[in-house]
Image (cartoon, rainbow, N blue to C red; front, side, top):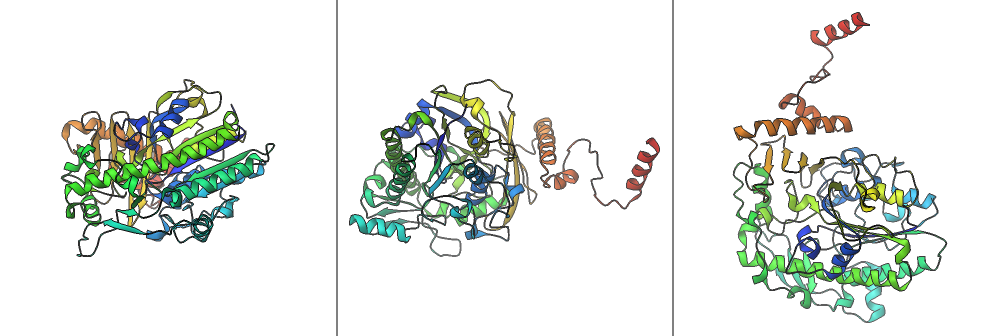
Length: 502
């Protein structure tokens, strides 16, 4: 199945449980819920890494982060590459070679020196991690419409360990909806959609990438106060003690000032976060309405997803970081392809990475260059196909280098942390991941099975993280010199034995 046009809707730092389609009873998202009913909702959709720039670079390339090597955000870079290497395959360049118009309105954040236009995207240049409210195109948008400038009050923040003010988590925005950055992004997207629709013989790929609901949650009154904090059911993992967990998690909790704020503030933050999602849902509705008005629905595949999740108080954390919990790795993912079944819910383990091969297949382009990506088209078409029973994710650091690898299967999750203790969670009995059972004796068979499975997958991919695992854990039989020295008697003897056999 192929589709001439592709509309890709993306948010940033978006929890899966904020959508009605994923079970939130208090904060309906009618537009995205409707998209799910008319398409396929993926229940186990994961990010390859829970941090913006590496995840977005993976979407562009169809490569896992360890392979494309853009491993951290520019703002907190710890010495890693900041831009894709020249000559790296990207889906947008492949689409343009195929004759597509390609547009990106909103958050880029997939590189520093190279912007969206460097790869062939039309649209305003909007770099950075947060709403760039000083961007000249946005300021011109406000001036043309006589709309007031950005102004905030009622700031919510905690206190840092050194006594300084914590990161801004939320604030009240003194602008009407029409002046919000979200409304501006949707307006610019509709304008570009109209431009592309005026050339019906040229297919298009158009991405609308919101900066929200990434913190700080800065929204007008009607969204700041949309939900009663008393309706908010606090996540069970707010009872996190960090007992038996890597110490970095407790440090991150202090960095995000969770314990310096009353629990009522956490409820309010979650309620404002829901309001932010509602604002975005409405703006997506404007874009989908334009798609229908222009007669493009039947010829356009629509995606909705995000780069990664958000803690919003879960595990006494905010933002994201070196903790591979479901809150930030499992994300929403919805795909609608014209002619495919509607109302499907798929339970296969899929990834943001898989969007790359899917986009290419829909455009009639060989997806093979997207080497770590697999097309979702067969699943959206409702076919039963062989699929991996698990998924591997990775992390490389944010404020400091911190390598992690994760294997998630149906019931269990293994996280390898070379700096401290590893983690193993039984998601059937402990869906909130409060109890690390890695060292429990009865879990030895599970621990060994998952460790060997992860080891094999990393070796097959060429992810050199496996070298650490070779000498530190039970990874089963190895068919190579684990010391990699090539200088001792064992290596020489092995070479002689091979020569003798030959």
